Image (tube, rainbow, N blue to C red):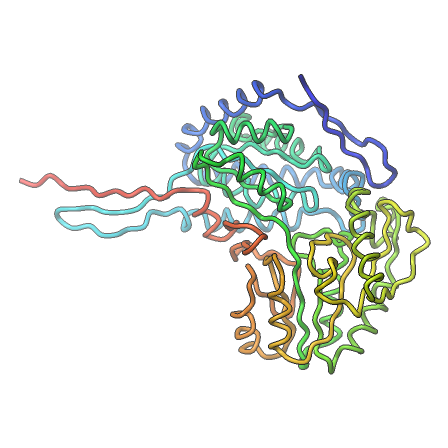
Length: 460
């Protein structure tokens, strides 16, 4: 029996796209095709795989004029921001550029008697379960290096961005990547879990909620299938007394509000040294009050609707609970706020860590700001979280940022920037944010396995 996945547009609540899911048998057949195609794909020269992947990336770029409004319809990002191709291409290009070095054998030694080295070989069939918030960039993080390393890939994209996987697969196929090497599939949660439990995949990369990550781990229990997880976040910013306040406000507030706050490494809580607190808050309020909430298809819109009414309801609940507990909400309700997906961006003060808005992932356009007296207090507050993806430190003192950064429980430490993914660095997290790591040379290590060669030469 087939179910139907429906993408409900946050613009007006209409069904923008729908696709039937594969049955379990159909899904198993697709996985079997991917496995069968892997050896021949891995046998191709590395440069050939790189060239085909980058041709697929370019083909996605050629679709950008169609993709940008399509994303606005599916998940609400304003068209004025132009889509994701810049980051999509940057990440794939970087991984293509380091492939030869990252995948090169490790030479241990050779003499008259022995030759010893360690190769990195592909895992096999990789399942990529991608999220809706940055649907192209998050998918390419794994798709490009997995294919380049010689794996085959099945991509299951989020229902909210139902058409993204189709576009990527079509572009890669048109560029010459064989259809069984890179497949887009529409699967229910149950079918996905059943496939993982049946050892259909050699590796699963999942980006999504903590609950979704737990479901992946339960499905894989006892199969020894490798799993990479990027889950929730509650990323902090810390503004020290020597910071450039204007730069800190511009970057941290944008990091909190861009994409309606729906960023994996978005800023969700800000700690400001008491000497700069009033100035920071005043400037932050000016920025947010200047936003234009509205239809993402209109050029003047700077902040669009949240992707789903359910997500907006959670943000409203966190704000309401905080205000009832003593927080101050500084932004008056925008006239475009409809009580549904269109949500007023909000700045809260007088917040504490007893409030959910400072503990639970909000994933929406709200940020709490707290005053701190020194590094010790800021470090304690930043670490008082179940999550650890990124932390953003604002200071003119590089050595101080490194000292503070060493004490923060996080995957990435930023200084004087935020909400950015550098493909040369490992994208990773700790605590309930997940495990594993993508991009960089480490991304290749996580998509391959070491294979040792200890070869004794025949001598007379």
